[in-house]
Length: 140
Image 1: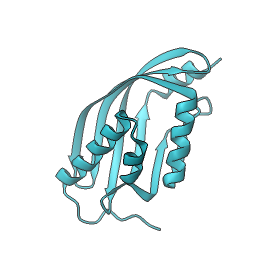
Image 2: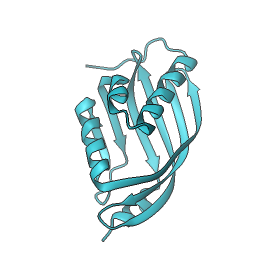
Image 3: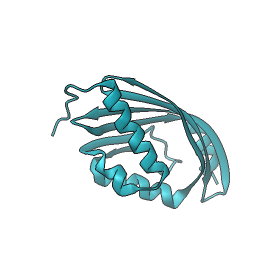
Image 4: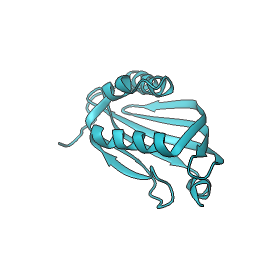
C-alpha cells in the first residue's frame, strides 16, 4: 500500500511526533505503535557493524528494530533538542549517549531524525548519526 501525505498541518504533525518521542522516552511501546502507520518505513544508514542498522518495513519491522536495540544497546542519554515542522515532516535534532552491550564501549553522537506523517500516523522515520562512532563501539 502506498503512503500519501495528504493534507496535514505543521502543528498537527509536530504534536504527533512529539507524542511519539514522549512514548519512546517513557518506554510506552503500545502508545508508540499506536502512532505508526501500518506500512511505516523505519531506518538508519546500513553498516554491518551496527546491529540495528538498515531499513525496516511495517510495524513488525519497527518491533524488530526495538528488539535488536534492547538486546545490543543501553541508552544512557537521549535528548531531542529541537523539533522543526514543515507540513507533513518534522526534523528532530538532538544527541545521545549509548553503550554497545557486546563490547561495553560507550559512544556519543548528535542525531538528526526526519519523520514523515501520512494519514495521521508516522509513515517514515529516517535516522542520521555518527555511524563511525557507533561502529567503533561495536567493534571487538
